[in-house]
Image (cartoon, rainbow, N blue to C red; front, side, top):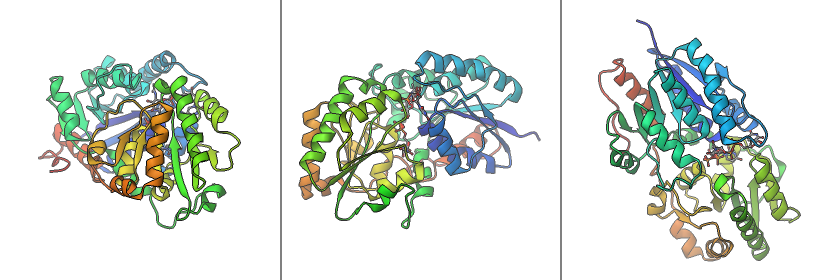
Length: 382
Ligand code: UD1
Ligand code: UDP
Protein backbone atom coordinates (compact mmCIF):
# COMPACT_ATOMS: atom_id res chain seq x y z
CA UNK A 1 0.00 0.00 0.00
CA UNK A 2 1.41 3.44 -0.86
CA UNK A 3 2.01 5.78 2.03
CA UNK A 4 -0.01 8.94 2.65
CA UNK A 5 2.24 11.92 1.89
CA UNK A 6 1.78 14.61 4.52
CA UNK A 7 3.55 17.92 3.90
CA UNK A 8 4.08 20.40 6.72
CA UNK A 9 4.48 24.00 5.50
CA UNK A 10 5.81 26.71 7.80
CA UNK A 11 8.02 29.77 7.70
CA UNK A 12 8.41 31.72 10.95
CA UNK A 13 9.96 30.98 14.33
CA UNK A 14 6.72 30.27 16.24
CA UNK A 15 5.37 28.00 13.51
CA UNK A 16 8.66 26.10 13.55
CA UNK A 17 8.64 25.64 17.34
CA UNK A 18 5.13 24.23 17.15
CA UNK A 19 5.44 22.26 13.89
CA UNK A 20 8.90 20.69 14.31
CA UNK A 21 7.77 18.18 16.97
CA UNK A 22 4.79 17.30 14.77
CA UNK A 23 6.94 16.87 11.65
CA UNK A 24 9.18 14.51 13.66
CA UNK A 25 6.14 12.58 14.95
CA UNK A 26 4.76 12.20 11.40
CA UNK A 27 8.16 10.90 10.23
CA UNK A 28 7.98 8.16 12.87
CA UNK A 29 4.66 6.80 11.51
CA UNK A 30 5.17 3.84 9.16
CA UNK A 31 1.97 4.57 7.20
CA UNK A 32 2.94 8.17 6.42
CA UNK A 33 5.57 9.82 4.27
CA UNK A 34 6.44 13.08 6.02
CA UNK A 35 7.58 15.98 3.84
CA UNK A 36 8.62 19.36 5.18
CA UNK A 37 8.52 22.61 3.21
CA UNK A 38 9.70 25.89 4.71
CA UNK A 39 9.01 29.25 3.12
CA UNK A 40 11.71 30.83 5.32
CA UNK A 41 9.54 33.88 5.87
CA UNK A 42 12.03 34.11 8.73
CA UNK A 43 15.58 33.03 7.91
CA UNK A 44 17.92 33.08 10.94
CA UNK A 45 15.13 32.70 13.48
CA UNK A 46 13.71 29.72 11.57
CA UNK A 47 17.05 28.01 11.03
CA UNK A 48 17.82 28.24 14.72
CA UNK A 49 14.67 26.24 15.55
CA UNK A 50 15.33 23.69 12.80
CA UNK A 51 18.81 23.14 14.24
CA UNK A 52 17.56 22.60 17.79
CA UNK A 53 15.04 19.97 16.65
CA UNK A 54 17.37 18.42 14.08
CA UNK A 55 14.80 18.86 11.31
CA UNK A 56 15.95 19.08 7.67
CA UNK A 57 13.33 20.51 5.30
CA UNK A 58 12.77 18.81 1.94
CA UNK A 59 11.91 22.13 0.28
CA UNK A 60 13.03 25.67 1.13
CA UNK A 61 11.48 28.66 -0.69
CA UNK A 62 13.94 31.08 0.98
CA UNK A 63 11.57 34.04 0.52
CA UNK A 64 12.67 36.41 3.30
CA UNK A 65 13.54 40.02 2.43
CA UNK A 66 14.48 42.85 4.80
CA UNK A 67 11.38 44.85 5.77
CA UNK A 68 9.18 42.52 3.74
CA UNK A 69 5.53 43.42 3.24
CA UNK A 70 2.50 41.21 3.69
CA UNK A 71 2.01 41.19 -0.08
CA UNK A 72 5.54 40.04 -0.87
CA UNK A 73 5.40 37.21 1.68
CA UNK A 74 2.02 36.07 0.39
CA UNK A 75 2.78 36.29 -3.33
CA UNK A 76 6.25 34.71 -3.06
CA UNK A 77 4.84 31.83 -1.01
CA UNK A 78 1.95 31.28 -3.40
CA UNK A 79 4.22 31.21 -6.45
CA UNK A 80 6.93 29.14 -4.76
CA UNK A 81 4.47 26.54 -3.51
CA UNK A 82 3.19 25.92 -7.04
CA UNK A 83 6.30 24.06 -8.14
CA UNK A 84 6.72 22.28 -4.79
CA UNK A 85 3.16 20.98 -4.74
CA UNK A 86 3.28 19.90 -8.37
CA UNK A 87 6.52 18.00 -7.78
CA UNK A 88 5.69 16.41 -4.43
CA UNK A 89 1.92 15.92 -4.82
CA UNK A 90 1.13 15.47 -1.12
CA UNK A 91 -2.13 13.87 -0.06
CA UNK A 92 -2.45 16.36 2.82
CA UNK A 93 -0.87 19.71 3.63
CA UNK A 94 -0.53 20.94 7.21
CA UNK A 95 -0.21 24.62 8.06
CA UNK A 96 0.08 26.23 11.47
CA UNK A 97 -1.53 29.18 13.16
CA UNK A 98 -1.99 32.56 11.54
CA UNK A 99 1.04 33.95 9.72
CA UNK A 100 1.23 35.01 6.09
CA UNK A 101 2.97 31.70 5.35
CA UNK A 102 0.01 29.91 6.94
CA UNK A 103 -2.55 31.69 4.79
CA UNK A 104 -0.60 31.50 1.54
CA UNK A 105 0.38 27.87 2.17
CA UNK A 106 -3.24 26.88 2.70
CA UNK A 107 -4.37 28.85 -0.36
CA UNK A 108 -1.69 27.23 -2.52
CA UNK A 109 -2.83 23.77 -1.42
CA UNK A 110 -6.44 24.69 -2.16
CA UNK A 111 -5.48 25.85 -5.66
CA UNK A 112 -4.07 22.34 -6.17
CA UNK A 113 -7.16 20.73 -4.62
CA UNK A 114 -5.03 19.22 -1.87
CA UNK A 115 -6.75 18.78 1.52
CA UNK A 116 -5.51 21.11 4.27
CA UNK A 117 -5.09 20.47 7.99
CA UNK A 118 -4.89 23.53 10.23
CA UNK A 119 -2.81 23.10 13.37
CA UNK A 120 -3.70 25.56 16.18
CA UNK A 121 -7.15 26.22 14.77
CA UNK A 122 -9.99 28.25 16.23
CA UNK A 123 -8.19 31.09 18.01
CA UNK A 124 -10.09 34.36 17.68
CA UNK A 125 -10.21 37.93 18.97
CA UNK A 126 -13.07 38.94 16.64
CA UNK A 127 -11.19 42.13 15.79
CA UNK A 128 -9.86 41.87 12.26
CA UNK A 129 -7.25 44.58 12.89
CA UNK A 130 -5.86 43.05 16.08
CA UNK A 131 -3.78 41.01 15.91
CA UNK A 132 -3.04 42.26 12.42
CA UNK A 133 -3.01 40.49 10.02
CA UNK A 134 -3.20 37.26 12.05
CA UNK A 135 -6.90 37.35 12.95
CA UNK A 136 -7.86 37.50 9.27
CA UNK A 137 -5.27 34.89 8.29
CA UNK A 138 -6.64 32.32 10.70
CA UNK A 139 -10.25 33.00 9.74
CA UNK A 140 -9.43 32.57 6.07
CA UNK A 141 -7.56 29.34 6.78
CA UNK A 142 -10.56 28.00 8.73
CA UNK A 143 -12.59 28.46 5.53
CA UNK A 144 -10.05 26.54 3.46
CA UNK A 145 -9.12 23.74 5.87
CA UNK A 146 -10.61 20.25 5.93
CA UNK A 147 -9.10 19.22 9.26
CA UNK A 148 -8.93 21.58 12.23
CA UNK A 149 -6.71 20.75 15.20
CA UNK A 150 -7.91 22.90 18.10
CA UNK A 151 -5.70 23.37 21.17
CA UNK A 152 -8.59 24.03 23.57
CA UNK A 153 -12.35 23.49 23.93
CA UNK A 154 -12.91 27.26 23.62
CA UNK A 155 -11.13 27.19 20.24
CA UNK A 156 -13.47 24.42 19.09
CA UNK A 157 -16.48 26.46 20.25
CA UNK A 158 -15.23 29.43 18.22
CA UNK A 159 -15.21 27.26 15.11
CA UNK A 160 -18.66 25.86 15.89
CA UNK A 161 -19.99 29.44 16.00
CA UNK A 162 -18.73 29.80 12.42
CA UNK A 163 -20.44 26.50 11.49
CA UNK A 164 -17.13 24.65 11.23
CA UNK A 165 -17.99 21.35 12.89
CA UNK A 166 -16.65 18.65 10.53
CA UNK A 167 -13.08 17.38 10.85
CA UNK A 168 -12.52 19.21 14.14
CA UNK A 169 -10.23 17.59 16.74
CA UNK A 170 -9.43 18.77 20.26
CA UNK A 171 -5.72 18.05 20.56
CA UNK A 172 -4.00 20.53 22.88
CA UNK A 173 -1.21 22.77 21.61
CA UNK A 174 2.00 21.24 20.25
CA UNK A 175 3.96 24.02 21.97
CA UNK A 176 3.69 22.06 25.22
CA UNK A 177 5.17 19.01 23.43
CA UNK A 178 8.07 21.25 22.35
CA UNK A 179 8.53 22.70 25.83
CA UNK A 180 8.91 19.24 27.34
CA UNK A 181 11.96 18.52 25.21
CA UNK A 182 13.94 21.70 25.94
CA UNK A 183 13.93 22.42 29.68
CA UNK A 184 16.85 21.16 31.72
CA UNK A 185 17.72 21.74 35.36
CA UNK A 186 21.45 22.03 34.55
CA UNK A 187 21.21 24.22 31.47
CA UNK A 188 24.19 26.39 30.49
CA UNK A 189 23.40 29.48 28.43
CA UNK A 190 25.66 30.32 25.52
CA UNK A 191 25.40 34.03 26.42
CA UNK A 192 27.72 34.77 29.41
CA UNK A 193 25.39 37.57 30.57
CA UNK A 194 22.61 35.04 31.12
CA UNK A 195 24.90 32.60 32.93
CA UNK A 196 26.17 35.37 35.22
CA UNK A 197 22.70 36.50 36.37
CA UNK A 198 21.76 35.52 39.92
CA UNK A 199 18.24 34.21 39.31
CA UNK A 200 17.63 33.74 43.04
CA UNK A 201 18.65 37.22 44.27
CA UNK A 202 17.85 39.40 41.26
CA UNK A 203 14.39 39.80 39.71
CA UNK A 204 14.84 38.80 36.10
CA UNK A 205 12.10 40.23 33.91
CA UNK A 206 11.90 38.56 30.50
CA UNK A 207 10.53 40.77 27.73
CA UNK A 208 9.58 40.21 24.10
CA UNK A 209 7.67 42.56 21.83
CA UNK A 210 7.28 42.33 18.07
CA UNK A 211 3.66 42.52 16.88
CA UNK A 212 2.86 44.62 13.81
CA UNK A 213 -0.14 46.32 15.48
CA UNK A 214 2.27 47.53 18.21
CA UNK A 215 4.59 49.29 15.71
CA UNK A 216 4.80 53.05 16.34
CA UNK A 217 3.20 54.67 19.38
CA UNK A 218 2.22 51.47 21.26
CA UNK A 219 5.79 50.19 21.05
CA UNK A 220 7.15 53.57 22.20
CA UNK A 221 4.84 53.51 25.24
CA UNK A 222 5.74 49.91 26.06
CA UNK A 223 9.48 50.63 25.86
CA UNK A 224 9.10 53.74 28.02
CA UNK A 225 7.29 51.70 30.68
CA UNK A 226 10.08 49.09 30.57
CA UNK A 227 12.78 51.70 31.17
CA UNK A 228 10.79 53.22 34.05
CA UNK A 229 10.55 49.75 35.62
CA UNK A 230 14.28 49.18 35.42
CA UNK A 231 14.86 52.64 36.95
CA UNK A 232 12.33 52.11 39.75
CA UNK A 233 13.46 48.63 40.84
CA UNK A 234 17.23 48.30 41.43
CA UNK A 235 16.88 44.53 41.86
CA UNK A 236 15.42 44.12 38.36
CA UNK A 237 17.47 42.76 35.47
CA UNK A 238 15.47 43.19 32.30
CA UNK A 239 16.36 40.70 29.58
CA UNK A 240 14.96 41.41 26.14
CA UNK A 241 15.95 39.16 23.22
CA UNK A 242 15.10 41.57 20.40
CA UNK A 243 13.28 40.26 17.32
CA UNK A 244 15.30 40.79 14.11
CA UNK A 245 12.65 43.00 12.50
CA UNK A 246 14.38 46.33 11.80
CA UNK A 247 11.31 48.19 13.09
CA UNK A 248 11.55 46.40 16.43
CA UNK A 249 15.34 46.73 16.60
CA UNK A 250 15.09 50.48 16.08
CA UNK A 251 12.44 50.96 18.78
CA UNK A 252 14.19 48.74 21.34
CA UNK A 253 17.57 50.43 20.92
CA UNK A 254 16.09 53.92 20.82
CA UNK A 255 14.33 53.57 24.19
CA UNK A 256 16.33 50.94 26.06
CA UNK A 257 20.02 51.35 25.14
CA UNK A 258 22.62 52.39 27.72
CA UNK A 259 21.03 51.11 30.89
CA UNK A 260 23.19 48.92 33.16
CA UNK A 261 20.36 46.51 33.99
CA UNK A 262 18.60 46.33 30.63
CA UNK A 263 20.07 43.55 28.51
CA UNK A 264 19.12 43.85 24.84
CA UNK A 265 20.33 40.60 23.36
CA UNK A 266 19.99 38.70 20.08
CA UNK A 267 17.02 36.35 19.61
CA UNK A 268 17.61 33.25 21.70
CA UNK A 269 17.64 29.69 20.44
CA UNK A 270 14.42 28.10 21.60
CA UNK A 271 16.04 25.86 24.24
CA UNK A 272 17.78 28.95 25.67
CA UNK A 273 14.49 30.84 25.66
CA UNK A 274 12.59 28.09 27.45
CA UNK A 275 15.29 27.70 30.08
CA UNK A 276 15.47 31.45 30.65
CA UNK A 277 11.69 31.52 31.06
CA UNK A 278 11.90 28.69 33.58
CA UNK A 279 14.35 30.77 35.67
CA UNK A 280 12.91 34.29 35.36
CA UNK A 281 10.59 36.08 37.78
CA UNK A 282 8.10 37.62 35.39
CA UNK A 283 7.29 37.72 31.67
CA UNK A 284 6.17 40.83 29.77
CA UNK A 285 5.28 40.02 26.19
CA UNK A 286 3.08 40.51 23.16
CA UNK A 287 4.02 37.03 21.90
CA UNK A 288 1.41 34.34 21.41
CA UNK A 289 3.77 31.46 22.15
CA UNK A 290 5.12 32.96 25.38
CA UNK A 291 1.55 33.35 26.66
CA UNK A 292 1.21 29.58 26.35
CA UNK A 293 4.65 28.54 27.57
CA UNK A 294 5.07 30.74 30.65
CA UNK A 295 1.89 29.54 32.44
CA UNK A 296 3.09 25.95 32.05
CA UNK A 297 6.28 27.02 33.87
CA UNK A 298 4.42 28.86 36.64
CA UNK A 299 5.57 32.32 35.52
CA UNK A 300 3.19 35.30 35.66
CA UNK A 301 2.67 36.99 32.30
CA UNK A 302 1.64 40.56 31.54
CA UNK A 303 0.43 40.72 27.96
CA UNK A 304 1.48 43.86 26.10
CA UNK A 305 -1.63 43.96 23.92
CA UNK A 306 -5.21 45.24 24.07
CA UNK A 307 -6.74 41.78 23.67
CA UNK A 308 -5.78 38.14 23.54
CA UNK A 309 -7.01 35.12 21.62
CA UNK A 310 -5.70 32.99 24.47
CA UNK A 311 -8.17 33.61 27.33
CA UNK A 312 -7.59 30.27 29.06
CA UNK A 313 -4.56 31.32 31.12
CA UNK A 314 -6.21 34.68 31.89
CA UNK A 315 -9.14 32.72 33.37
CA UNK A 316 -6.68 30.53 35.27
CA UNK A 317 -5.15 33.68 36.80
CA UNK A 318 -1.55 33.42 35.51
CA UNK A 319 -1.88 35.89 32.63
CA UNK A 320 -3.16 39.49 32.70
CA UNK A 321 -3.78 41.90 29.88
CA UNK A 322 -1.67 44.97 30.54
CA UNK A 323 -2.54 46.83 27.33
CA UNK A 324 -0.17 49.07 25.40
CA UNK A 325 -0.23 52.26 27.50
CA UNK A 326 2.78 53.21 29.61
CA UNK A 327 1.05 53.81 32.97
CA UNK A 328 -0.97 50.56 33.36
CA UNK A 329 1.99 48.47 32.20
CA UNK A 330 4.24 50.20 34.74
CA UNK A 331 1.68 49.90 37.55
CA UNK A 332 0.81 46.24 36.97
CA UNK A 333 4.45 45.21 36.70
CA UNK A 334 5.37 47.30 39.76
CA UNK A 335 2.72 45.50 41.82
CA UNK A 336 4.06 42.09 40.79
CA UNK A 337 7.62 43.16 41.58
CA UNK A 338 6.83 44.61 44.99
CA UNK A 339 3.87 42.66 46.39
CA UNK A 340 4.66 39.01 47.15
CA UNK A 341 1.01 38.09 47.78
CA UNK A 342 -0.07 39.46 44.41
CA UNK A 343 2.88 37.70 42.79
CA UNK A 344 2.07 34.36 44.41
CA UNK A 345 -1.54 34.59 43.22
CA UNK A 346 -0.34 34.62 39.63
CA UNK A 347 2.70 32.35 39.88
CA UNK A 348 0.94 29.01 39.63
CA UNK A 349 1.79 26.42 37.03
CA UNK A 350 -1.26 25.72 34.89
CA UNK A 351 -1.50 23.82 31.64
CA UNK A 352 -4.66 24.86 29.84
CA UNK A 353 -2.93 24.58 26.46
CA UNK A 354 -1.65 21.03 26.37
CA UNK A 355 -0.26 17.95 28.04
CA UNK A 356 2.65 17.11 25.75
CA UNK A 357 0.56 14.63 23.71
CA UNK A 358 -0.73 16.96 21.00
CA UNK A 359 1.51 15.75 18.18
CA UNK A 360 0.51 12.13 18.79
CA UNK A 361 -3.17 13.10 18.73
CA UNK A 362 -2.81 15.06 15.49
CA UNK A 363 -0.94 12.20 13.79
CA UNK A 364 -3.55 9.72 15.08
CA UNK A 365 -6.38 11.92 13.80
CA UNK A 366 -4.78 12.11 10.35
CA UNK A 367 -4.29 8.35 10.22
CA UNK A 368 -7.89 7.81 11.27
CA UNK A 369 -9.31 10.25 8.72
CA UNK A 370 -7.34 8.58 5.95
CA UNK A 371 -8.34 5.02 6.98
CA UNK A 372 -4.97 4.04 8.44
CA UNK A 373 -6.24 3.63 12.02
CA UNK A 374 -9.43 2.16 13.46
CA UNK A 375 -10.21 4.82 16.08
CA UNK A 376 -9.86 8.59 16.42
CA UNK A 377 -7.60 9.91 19.21
CA UNK A 378 -9.00 10.71 22.64
CA UNK A 379 -9.63 14.42 23.17
CA UNK A 380 -7.17 16.63 25.04
CA UNK A 381 -8.44 17.07 28.58
CA UNK A 382 -10.77 14.06 28.38
C1 UD1 B 1 5.73 37.24 11.70
C2 UD1 B 1 4.25 36.90 11.69
C3 UD1 B 1 3.66 37.03 13.08
C4 UD1 B 1 4.47 36.25 14.10
C5 UD1 B 1 5.93 36.63 14.01
C6 UD1 B 1 6.73 35.76 14.92
C7 UD1 B 1 3.04 37.52 9.64
C8 UD1 B 1 2.27 38.55 8.95
N1 UD1 B 1 3.53 37.86 10.85
O1 UD1 B 1 5.84 38.61 12.01
O2 UD1 B 1 2.33 36.53 13.08
O3 UD1 B 1 3.99 36.54 15.39
O4 UD1 B 1 6.39 36.43 12.66
O5 UD1 B 1 8.00 36.26 15.19
O6 UD1 B 1 3.19 36.45 9.13
N2 UD1 B 1 13.81 39.20 10.08
C9 UD1 B 1 15.13 38.84 9.90
N3 UD1 B 1 15.49 37.55 10.21
C10 UD1 B 1 14.63 36.63 10.69
C11 UD1 B 1 13.29 37.02 10.88
C12 UD1 B 1 12.89 38.31 10.55
O7 UD1 B 1 15.94 39.63 9.47
O8 UD1 B 1 15.03 35.50 10.97
C13 UD1 B 1 13.40 40.58 9.73
C14 UD1 B 1 13.32 40.83 8.22
O9 UD1 B 1 13.74 42.13 7.95
C15 UD1 B 1 11.80 40.73 7.97
C16 UD1 B 1 11.26 41.34 9.25
O10 UD1 B 1 12.11 40.84 10.27
O11 UD1 B 1 11.41 41.42 6.81
C17 UD1 B 1 9.83 41.03 9.58
O12 UD1 B 1 9.53 39.65 9.46
P1 UD1 B 1 8.02 39.20 9.12
O13 UD1 B 1 7.96 37.71 9.09
O14 UD1 B 1 7.53 39.93 7.93
O15 UD1 B 1 7.18 39.78 10.33
P2 UD1 B 1 7.19 39.43 11.86
O16 UD1 B 1 6.93 40.69 12.60
O17 UD1 B 1 8.36 38.61 12.19
N1 UDP C 1 11.33 32.39 21.12
C1 UDP C 1 12.66 32.01 20.99
N2 UDP C 1 13.64 32.97 21.10
C2 UDP C 1 13.34 34.27 21.33
C3 UDP C 1 11.98 34.65 21.44
C4 UDP C 1 11.00 33.69 21.32
O1 UDP C 1 12.95 30.84 20.81
O2 UDP C 1 14.29 35.06 21.42
C5 UDP C 1 10.29 31.35 21.00
C6 UDP C 1 9.28 31.34 22.12
O3 UDP C 1 9.74 30.55 23.21
C7 UDP C 1 8.07 30.74 21.43
C8 UDP C 1 8.17 31.32 20.04
O4 UDP C 1 9.54 31.65 19.84
O5 UDP C 1 8.17 29.34 21.34
C9 UDP C 1 7.29 32.53 19.93
O6 UDP C 1 7.64 33.25 18.79
P1 UDP C 1 7.23 34.76 18.60
O7 UDP C 1 7.06 35.42 19.91
O8 UDP C 1 8.23 35.31 17.65
O9 UDP C 1 5.86 34.66 17.81
P2 UDP C 1 4.33 34.54 18.25
O10 UDP C 1 4.19 33.37 19.17
O11 UDP C 1 3.94 35.84 18.88
O12 UDP C 1 3.60 34.37 16.96
